[in-house]
Length: 381
Image 1: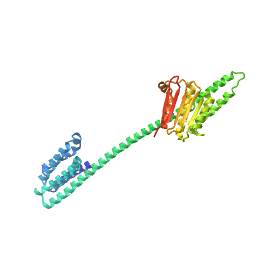
Image 2: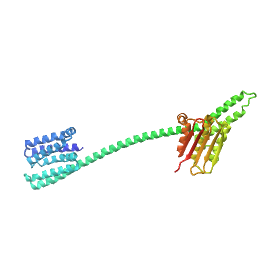
Image 3: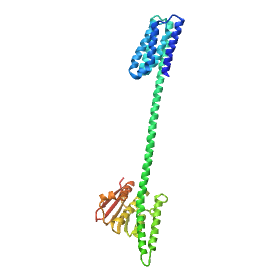
Image 4: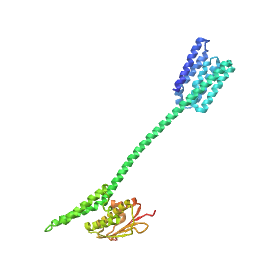
């Protein structure tokens, strides 16, 4: 739009020159030649500036010089002062505000200088004032266009930044959802391992015992089937607790100590494991702490049943000291701790995760033929 205005002003000057040539004395040929050169340079400016970044400096000097030559060649051709209008627009675009308006001030001085070269004072002053105001307005127009373009570019940049941020936010949201899903899957697998694995193991033993009893004369499978039914009910309760349909059944009645006691009774009934329970003190623990401590005891007793080769275990819950603690101990075959961490799957790793979730420390000590000692202790705050 700005360049179109400069071209139209030049066309208006040519049209006025043609009209002037018809109304009064003919315009000198040299003026026509200079006007032609001015127009050629004007219309080629954008293309040359694109190829040569320093070209606007030379352009401004040359065009200003051509305009001054024409003005002072024949001061009576007042319409030639209009050529300063496109220059006023361009210098503000080329050199920005301060230098651009300094050039416009120079154009005003050039207009005033014609008063000393044959131009009448009254008409000359009017021409100087009108030209100066017009040049300033043209420069202000260029300044406004430049600011508008800058704002547009800034808006485009901000829009691009917003699009990029939105894209990153979508990616982050997708990653968060994937991480949440993976975390939930891991939690479910851990809960299934801790709660149902031993129950299913015991159910398998009950089925095998029932099969063996069928071979006896007379067969007596009733006891094993009743045991299998009890285990199935226990598994159903665990699944309901796992899916959030019901609280953890063992903790819902009597708290952590009572839940551990019932767990010991189940192990004795199902697997023949005799568990000694020692509880000292009374203390209210948060529900997440009780649930994770219960699962740690459950996993430890599962491991004793399957791997320790003994039928006795000790569980000690201390609630009378500033830092509560839980201990599980057996005198079984033990194991190499380093190798077990790599092959035990969710067992030991699950204990460590549960202790970490509630902010407690976990210590496991075991050696072949020397039993296993597990201690979970509350951390000082």
